[in-house]
Image 1 (spheres, rainbow, N blue to C red):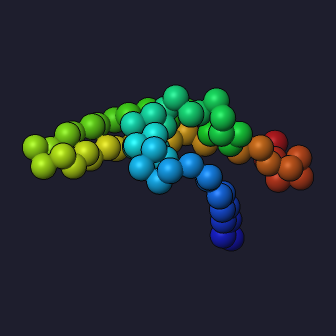
Image 2 (cartoon, rainbow, N blue to C red; image 1 turned 90 degrees about the vertical axis):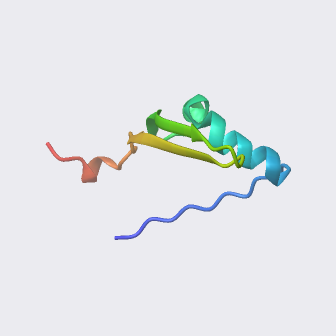
Amino acid sequence: MNFKSTAVIKHPIDLVWVTMRDKTPELVGLLDDVESVTVRERVEQDSGDVNVINIWQAAPKLPSFLHVI
């Protein structure tokens, strides 16, 4: 089973990219199906590149017939 979601964001791409890279844990309250995002590792290279590893915890809102008792 595949699930896919698409969102159109009408903001400058540089702002969106930096926000996604640096502030994802702060956005959790705006995401319905996400319980938490925790930064496991962040490494800023001398070249200016930034490597980030985030751990996502999902909290999907499933229809009642999909819940397992």
